[in-house]
Length: 296
Image (cartoon, rainbow, N blue to C red; front, side, top):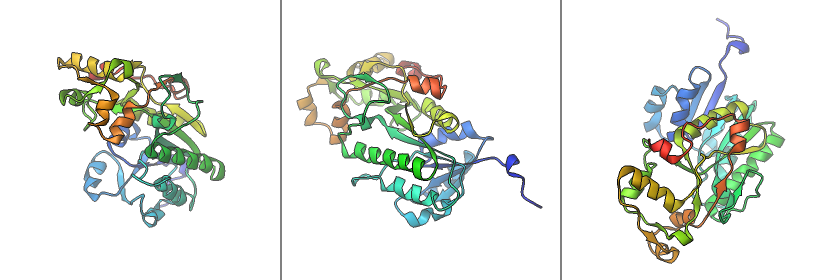
């Protein structure tokens, strides 16, 4: 029996890093894409198959395991984080090298972070603001974005970048803001507090799918909700919503003695993100415009 003509074949989507957000993407693309999910853990294969994906065993830290990816996918959703150390994102480099060996995907969507901007002192801004990463983690994200821009130019792949703030959901492991409040985790004094940004995991998954269809070449998008609050006020509202005690307020000097460098970095960067481009170009209507909408 001969193969079906290409016009009758479902396009192939490769999801790289199919964790919580990737699993939320799968039901949104079922029936429209044939989905391959890259994973370095065979223990996850059963869950991936049950969700409608075909698992592929590979490790982004081992370039040799990625050779099978050449020419497989029509589109790629890259959700994997950079490695935990080093000056650049070697995982993205390995992935792009593998994709370049065969017929290239037409589109690639990358999940980056709003940490690429560093501390903006509470400024409100859109995607035209220059990046200014303050942490090694954010610098690796900037390196990944630069690699993708080059892939757009050199390989002809239409790469779109989603810059993402804090992700939450009531059913997301480690992502429920109530848990942080229940632990009594401290926040900054009001006079030292920083603006923070959030997005519900379901809205993020929907933005990933929208970008696969509508994301422009070499275009960045703020994938964030409409909240406009400081971190302490945000967790006060969560506490009030659940009838919990509001978190204790501490000075930045006190918190420096209690928190890890990564936790401190979140409290040392203040940003207010404009999400107009996401709404107009990706045509995404938020299911959860604020965190309290998501909790309700």
